[in-house]
Length: 198
Image (cartoon, rainbow, N blue to C red; front, top):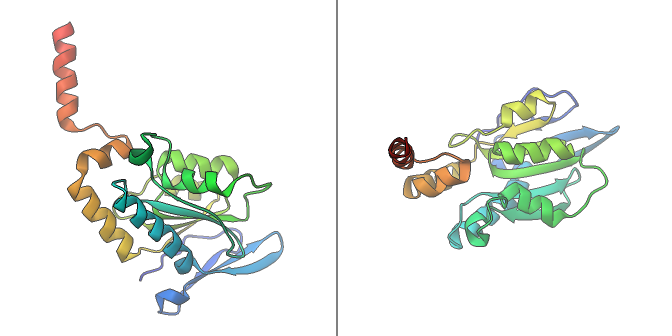
């Protein structure tokens, strides 16, 4: 597993000793340092993504952790299962975690780079760090979050890449719906309809 490290402004760094299960993120927040096992945390999000896929949904899982590794909430994209476009993996995990007084030392772990909607959630509540399973199939708002001072770590996890690659290939219309892209065929039909109304 490859670990990519973003430039850190607050002491967040990634150590990788060549063994994926020992990848750790060192978090320095509010004068304290704690160790967070990013790969073990990603396993939690990945299990949620697999569960979502088995339910016929979009395989994106997420989990919100405290900096000491305590799981606050986990969830998955349930847009299909709940017929609710607002239930993304990150929003589901956030809701399950419940109210927190301060999110600055929390870590959102997600199997896929957060979309603009979920990036907005991270920014709105000041979540301090994001661990991303993969950003090859979708890169969302990760650079915007970095520009705003959110620590973003990309693990480039092959399991996550394979799961999303297979899902997108098999379900392009559903995937495009999830990321807000209208299919070319739908655009052509809308153009024809608009032309006939003129």
